[in-house]
Image (cartoon, rainbow, N blue to C red; front, side, top):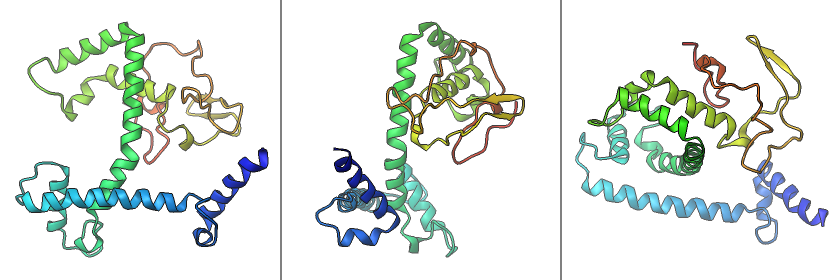
Length: 229
């Protein structure tokens, strides 16, 4: 049973490093053909979207993100730019947005709704802060972010306790000290827990409901921690 499970996994890992192996493997044991079909279907959908936009758009009057992308491509003359028309950038960007943003955004929103329903007192505090700053006569905008520290703290706490991409996190191999904080190993195994997508036990009684500096929230990913405020 172990061999039956491990062999396909081993083959898939090998194909990731040497894609040419997929040509000689029987069937689709590596999953390479299925993946290519998914990508092809996705690009076909995006081709339909971009074709419709090309026929109906008015330059410099974007109706949505696709129109804005087309305006950027039209205005780009630098051959080295990622937005130059020769690179055909629109469909790959749309595909990246769908594959990389939809699941993680949806997962985060699900966890936010879950915790709001379980902690109505927190929900009330969030509503008060939003109502005081924004009111009911307008929609929120990015400039409102700095004026809603409690909302930001709540979102960061959701990311901490239920990270949307747990397998993307680095694993601590030993206890570390950084800027006066002690980071202990919270994983008993090398892989995160699949139950609830929670890395270890984050329900420690040591965590109190209090504001911390933004830099204490380490956004492991594509950008450095936020500077202290």
